[in-house]
Length: 290
Ligand SMILES: CC(C)(COP(=O)(O)OP(=O)(O)OC[C@H]1O[C@@H](n2cnc3c(N)ncnc32)[C@H](O)[C@@H]1OP(=O)(O)O)[C@@H](O)C(=O)NCCC(=O)NCCSC(=O)C[C@H](O)C(=O)O
Ligand SMILES: [Mg+2]
Image 1 (cartoon, rainbow, N blue to C red):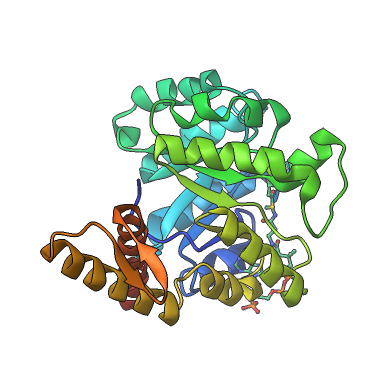
Image 2: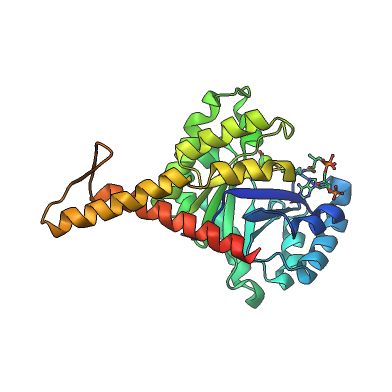
């Protein structure tokens, strides 16, 4: 699994020059350069050309860079790939993935060009069929991550938006479990009301508690909240260190269980504690580079 942080994954419409420029200085862990739903049909060709130029010329630092193309069976998907292969994209984000065959079709196209030999695939998980096929998709060739598309998912399911996201919960959890089985990144869907900080924080906390690595975002004003919520807190880091120290001391005494703050600590808790410290270190490393 990618060890970089994915707390904040910001969509930028490929047609917006100012937003593309601005993103190089924003505190996003990852950027989605979008040619799909954020770009109007009449702007598709211009956005493709603009993005090819911007990606060739701009240094986005250590941020992960995901390029969301249009679906391969749309009027634009293949041309997107054709025009952007030259920038050697680190990852293509494929929308509306329904099955492993969709991923395999893209992998075959990437295979054919030396420029995309290293390009990984991320899948938008945003259809009911995609959610039902989440495991085969997660295990498909070149797969590196899922981004949940909760707007499309709600549309296709005919469900309502609710603050607790109960109607989407089964699909979210199926995708998350598949990502964990396959060892790939899982990023939660967007929060549309980009001026509602309280609602965003609540949804980030829900996604974090469920196990998502981060949140996809639509506006720079959402970055700080996602970065804060998906980072381990000082208290979690301190507890992880104390758990590891106490467990090592217990092992040195020939015991397999330690007690910290009145709770047992076993081998499995140490796995989690090390993950917390690794995540904190990855965030610090990222912050040092931007
Ligand atoms: C939502 C917006 C349309 C708001 O745009 P605007 O009114 O221009 O915002 P501001 O005036 O507040 O912008 C302030 C400055 O920030 C820059 N900006 C705005 N958005 C971004 C961005 N996403 N990335 C980088 N920079 C951004 C502006 O240029 C201003 O800069 P400055 O001039 O220096 O002040 C707009 O935010 C927007 O278009 N957001 C993205 C929408 C989008 O990507 N939608 C598609 C993805 S959601 C989706 O499809 C998920 C999934 O598929 C699903 O199904 O759920
Ligand atoms: Mg969508």
